Amino acid sequence: MLADLCAEIKARWDKTLHPASLSRVVRKLGFSRQKARQVHSQSSREAQDAFQKGGFKRRSMQHAQLVQTSV
Image (cartoon, rainbow, N blue to C red):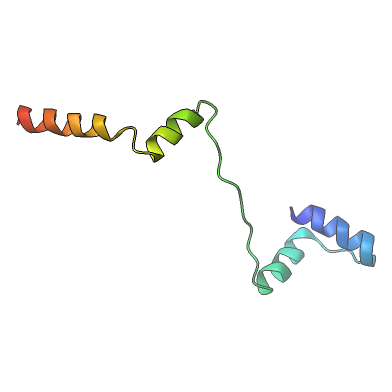
């Protein structure tokens, strides 16, 4: 966070900066704020791995066949 960076600058160089001012400096240097993606509390690692390996393709094909036969 910018507040942590402000505290580090104060500790190292005894220079006080407001986080908003530091934000402008950081953006001018070409950096941007990066945030981690949120993880859903009910997510299943096994289900994600099966999806990535193609474990759900059969279900999708069956669904497509059901849709075609009902039309």
